[in-house]
Length: 425
Ligand code: FES
Ligand SMILES: [Fe+2]
Image (cartoon, rainbow, N blue to C red; front, side, top):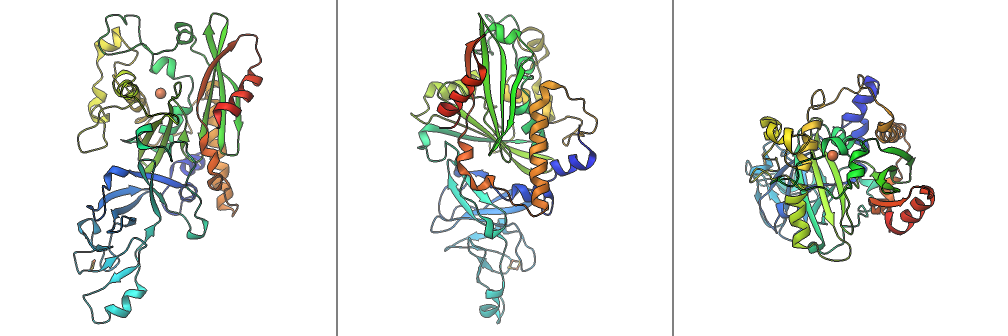
């Protein structure tokens, strides 16, 4: 449970807010690389941390992310002409480069000298790992790009995807930290043999039956929080899961064998966020089979309405819940694995959850720890203590690991050795 003040701090990320300042210390993915397909492409609208922006690629291929409105008389730059290394407002012809300098001011005699005094807000932007990354913080604190393991991989090793979620970013994040929901929300029912749509997940029946994961360890780290859970693995085994939250809003959930996954939430505004899912194999290209399973078998990528980043099954149609499916095949009656999450998080007493009235239990320990960690960081920042995390790009290299140990073995030793060899490579 949080106080009203803590909940407001946690959920507001607009300009001038504590959490807004925290997010603005990090590089954030804001567009798919494919949304800006080449030099002088069409400018695109985007909204990040409650700021309306326009993105474009100039004639030299540099990415520009600038205020959505012209500093002259506030006209929308979305209608601008992207020409000769700059974006020109079509109202009176003022033109800006990717760094925000006014390079032409043709509608007034004093324009030639006056333009040197005019700038538009512009944020550093880089294309990498299948996404456009933007840094919206102080110019004297620009950190290195995050060291996610997928960043430098060839395109074929990685699948970068995003979906609009209609709730506060932290609601979405908490879903990944909540270890006990998976074996309820995402579980399937008995009749699998005749089930045309749903595949049995790889978890053993014993693990599915054990609906009470135990937090073995939840620990603050130099990148965020690591949690270790144990469940029964059946046949004398314990299933150990290591998961991570990386500042400010990334988790490593859902990794499987050699294919790993990062989930990143970027606030659009306080009631909406963009959910990024990036799956990657550091060693070899993703196979057609892996991608097919991710899209169709495991339902990790819900189908989107064409030309948008909104799911076909969404809050406005009750996620097309199928009550026959719910009675017979799966727990929710909702098809996609990810949509099952979305359905439960987009309306937790609304898009911005009131955390003053919740009743948490021990299986919520990871959520509690992450809230405490990020609220402290936001408070530190407000009091002038800068964050170290943005300057530790290696912190993002963690990944989820699941493995079985004998029931009597030392979980500590297994975790330490896994962290060294697989958790952070
Ligand atoms: S409003 Fe853009 S040039 Fe006048
Ligand atoms: Fe989930």
